[in-house]
Image (tube, rainbow, N blue to C red; front, side, top):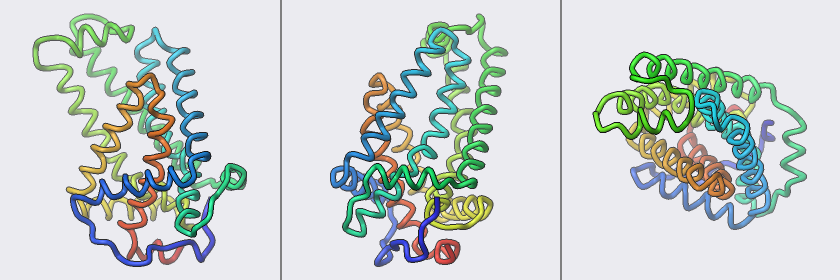
Length: 260
């Protein structure tokens, strides 16, 4: 799902600073308000998928953890059609659901391959997490309530904090590899390896800004899930549109983008 050679580009370079992530959220919200139907349809489908996962594996903690790890990692791939909606907004027009579906039906093997790689990363996290908790937990963790009682709500500082730290350490390279790569794969025809390299270069060049952006993405996603998935109906498209604007500003001078 690549763009035409004359795909919309930023009209001018925008200074990137610590306030930029809030600007991306504002721009993403403006896109959602301007053309809400494709975004809300994506959000509803992803929330419904989350409800289905929760219902299927609600009493099996490790299956639930694996399902939602994969869900959170692959969800950005599922929302890539909304990048086209944001691009259309910048062109002063509305892209309808039929246009977005047409893009998906055209297929893009690069996005499929990248999605599979992200899914493998999520599997690795679940296996590592299972090993840590099985080794350190005083009781077997079989159900979500077991994890809540014996890992999250214990008074002693230890296992839960180590689990969170390990999750952050494992999530960081996934974020660095995908945050710019996913929209670049939609916007250009570069191979996956180049998109990932550009994503890492962008994160390395703006570390403080990207940490703030990662925290905002994580917090808003958590809010969406903690509202019984209902918040995801709005938050998923909002973050997808905002991510497009982040990509546009951060890679305005990228040689890969110019070549795409």
